[in-house]
Amino acid sequence: MKRVAGIIAGALLFGAVAGASMVGVNIAAQQAGIAYHKSANVVTETAPAAEEKTEKTEKPAETEAAPVTENTPSTVQQAPVSSSVTSVTEVAKNAMPSVVAITNMVKYRQNGYSIFGNYQDFETEVPASGSGVIVQKTDTELLILTNNHVIESSESLSVTFIDDESVDAVVKGSDAAADLALIAIKLENIPTKTMEAISIATLGDSDALEVGDQVVAIGNALGYGQSVTTGIISAKNRDVATSKGTSSGLLQTDAAINPGNSGGALLNMKGEVIGINVAKYTSTSIEGMGYSIPSSKAKKIVESLSTLETREEIPESERGYLGVMVKNIDAQTAESFGMPQGVFIYKFIEGSTAKNEGLHEKDIITAMNGQGVTNFTDLSSILSKYRVGETVTLTVQRPNGDKYDEINVDVVLGQSPSSNNTSSDDQKGGIDPFSRNNGESGNDGSNSGNNNDNQNSREFSIDTDELWKTFQEFFNQYQR
Image (tube, rainbow, N blue to C red):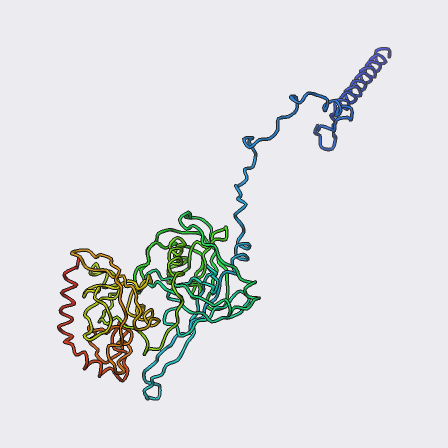
């Protein structure tokens, strides 16, 4: 029994000592700011006592933790953010007041046989939709940049602003070769509330763009009003072939650009216009290939066209004429024979009162008063705003061996080639001697199919076979 009692007494003594030791450890831990949580089975640091905080603040500064600097490593790296870069929502909200919808009323001539067998020939006006960007305000006008193909062949133009107010506009100047045009609206015709609602766009630096940069496109898609799409710059300096020639140096984007978007704005994320939307590839096998004219090119066109006097068409009886016979050099011909695209001067009209001695046969007209032209329609559209006796400057490409020299020639416009009521093409400044369809309609300076065509053919009787032969010889001479 004594042995058993001794063992029990020893066990109690050991337990007492162990318990006292644990109590001592806990007290020491609490004083050190460390607590043991049974539920989590972890050790955490507790807040230091007030007197310890006071003690720490009294320590010298060099013992405190070093401040965080830009070079201090971080667990998560944050993408760089520029204060000048905004969201798509902000870009669209800020840019929409500077983008307009353009409605172009175009004459459409329809002829043919109806389902009842009778021949029909009538002319009507149909609307065409496009977009534009407000780029300048002068003392008297508001200037809007758009595509030339948006305003060409227009009978009338109207512009609808952000507040749905529509105002009539006129073409101030155009450059068909660049597919850009500037239209003007008199400030006196714009309501005050509209002037307060709109804004002038800022043309940015398209040369600074990089492939992959995000962009926003705004325009009058399908004529439904302003809409916004977004994408990236897919490529730069693209050459795109169209029915009217090859457009060079375009920006390619996957932002949706649809009919009606032409002439609208392509913006960077700063809200600057870095492109004028112009075209897209459409096919069941093609997706996301839209194109814009870079702002770096558009700026130069705006600077040139904005200096022109705003003119409206004048009556045909008062218009001036160049006194030359012309032929279109279209894109296909120009590419095949290594020639400039433009209006080819074939022959001078005898008896013309135009002072055009500086022009030569075989010159190719590519611009008039700084406005690029690609065909006879472009040229006659500009001429329709100038009177007899006015001086215009023609930019021509003149053959010089195996190359062409660009020359500017001043011409004093003369009266109509015939004192009688000649065909509409005579009145526009030229006749197409190469058309094999004399007396039939044409769109390249040939007869327009009115009742005076036969008179015109008799007055300018030409051996067309001989002309075609001469023209072909000229092409062969410069073919490369």
